Image 1 (cartoon, rainbow, N blue to C red):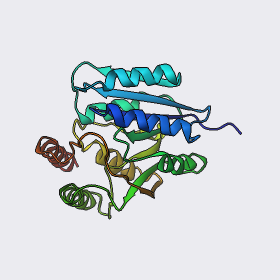
Image 2 (cartoon, rainbow, N blue to C red):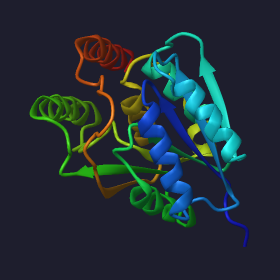
Image 3 (spheres, one colour):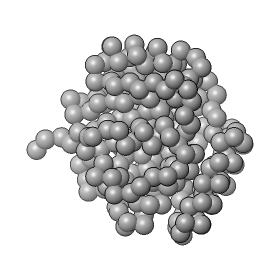
Image 4 (spheres, rainbow, N blue to C red):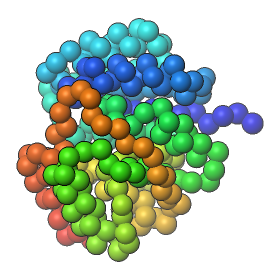
Length: 228
């Protein structure tokens, strides 16, 4: 039986050091079989992230790079990251190196099951109190929308491409994660949760707690509820 084809898609913004460590670690830890390819998307970074991922693609030929000349935004870039691949599965992974090879290996194990969508739950999230508070509040709101408890909707995930193709995605904000989850649940797809280790951010600064990210995410949540 042939192994299913998989693309590990990573959206990167100002993570020149983190993305280099992450990709090298994945290859060195033996996560990358012949059936796995990469898609790295730099969303208009202001540091040298673009040149770093280009060098990584030269070092590892299975890496495809997409570079945005200007910042297109969180939702646009993640939508591109998961809809561009034509492989059987897409594994979405953040580029900040807070999720590492141990988590990727656990997610990849699910390609041999009948699961349609697997989301990784951050065990003991390694962020400051404010980020954890924002995340808990947001997951509570998504839980209300989903009419079930949602623990970590904005985490990394694995999804079957033919399942993903059955839904349309409209969000241009960080709500994109929740939109995927909510629409897949509406279709009664088989969704799983997986507990993984979340590592502290060593390089750069996260933008998930900024008002400029939170406000449009909340607006997209309201739009989603209004459409329902």
